Image (spheres, rainbow, N blue to C red):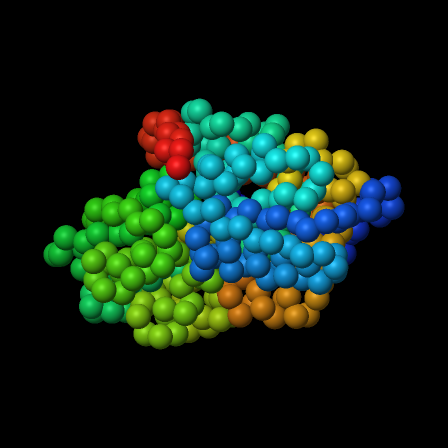
Amino acid sequence: MNPSRIAAIGALALGIAACATVADAPPFPSRPVTVIIPYPAGNAADLVGRVVVDKLAQAWGQPVNVENRPGATTVPGVDAVARAKPDGHTLLVHSVSYAVDAGLYANLPYDPDKDLVAVASFARQPFALVASPSLGVGSTAELAAKSRTTPLKFASLGPTTQIYFVAEQFRKQTGINATHVSYKSLIDANAAVAKGEAAFWFPPVAGALPAIRDGKLVPLAVTSSQRAAMLPQVPTMAEAGVRNMEIAAWFGLWAPAGTPAGVVGKIAHDVEQALSSPEVRDKLAKMGAEPLSMTSAQFDRFVRDEIASSRQLTKELGIQPQRFVPPPTP
C-alpha cells in the first residue's frame, strides 16, 4: 500500500476527464441516488465521503441519500451495493478496507474483482499514532520505553482492518509490547484511548483531529512522508525514528458491476470536478485529507493492486483467512 505510488497516480490523473464516455452517457441521474457507507457516522470514510457526495448532489440536482450501514465488518454494506440495480443510482463509498477485506476473507458473498466497478478515487490521508493523556508519554520513544515497564493495550476496529495492520507493523518496527483490544467504531476506540482503557491506536487523521484539538488524545506521529498540514507540530514516523511506516488510507466510490460505462464515466467526471472545487479541497484539508484523483481505469488498476498487496501482507503477518459470518436476519 505504497503512498508514493498513490501520489504519482493521483498527480498524473489530475485534470483528466473521460470526455468520450461522458458524451455517451445516458441522462444521469434520473432520480434520487442512494450512497451506502458501510461505516458509522463520524468514521473517517463517512466524514470524507460526505464532503464529495454533498458536492455531487449540488451538481446533479437530485437528492443524494446517504445510508450509513455499520456492522461488525463492512462486508454487508458492500454486498448490498453489489446486488443493487446496475444503473448508477446506488453507489458505495468505501476505503482501503475494500482491499483489506478481499485479502482477509475466504468466503465473501461478493467477488471484489468482478461484482463491483471502481468508479473514482477521491481522497487519501495518513494515520495518526495517538496515545492516552493518562499514559504520560509525548513521543514514540517514550511509548516504547513505557511498554517495557508497563503492560499496555492498543486499540483497533478489529483484526480485519487496516488500522490493525498499521499497529502490528508499528509494533514489529519498534518492539513495543502491547495487547490488542477491538472496538466497534472509531468513536468507541477514541473514547477508550482517551479514558486510558487502551494506551494507543492509529485512527486516520480525520477521525482523530476533534479529540486531539480537545486535548483528549496525544498525537505522537503521523504515517505520512511529510507532516500533516493540520498537525504541523506532530512529527512523521521517520522523524520519530520509525522507518517503513509511510502508510495512507484512501477512499473512493464504487458501483454495481454492469453499470453502463457512460454512467460510470459521468460519475467519475463529476467526482473530478468536485475535487477541483476550492470548497471541497479546503474541507478535505481541514480533515487532514487531500484529493486523490484518478480515472476509472486507473482506479480499477489501483484497487486490484491494493487487493494483491493485502493478500500478500496477510500471508506475511501469518494471518489465516477469516470466514465471514453473515449477521442474523432481523
